[in-house]
Image (cartoon, rainbow, N blue to C red):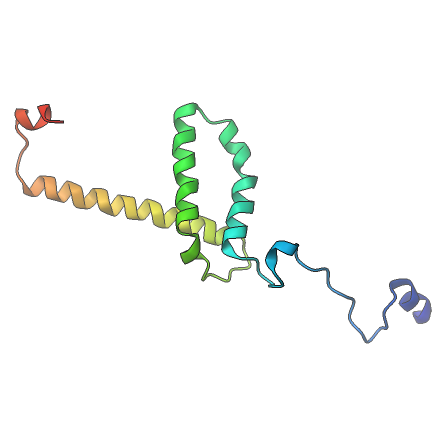
Length: 122
């Protein structure tokens, strides 16, 4: 009976079955590069963009650009959860923008109250 099963799968019971390789883009690695993962995940969520309003698509494009911008840094994460580097890149970019805005607000408050002429110069 075991010989029949072994012949069916064409390997012995002591030899593990051959593993299917990851898609060729991974260059022999177990975990694909972060850039490949980000491109694949962004392709998956591209349909979301189709249903956004035009002004929201600009925001979505900026968010995806931030993912690609920090993909090299996110590449150090050898996460088995493919979305982690993508989400961390998004969160990092948003936090960086928030800190820059907080800094600008503090600078404006330290200069004192704005006068009417300051509003007109914008």
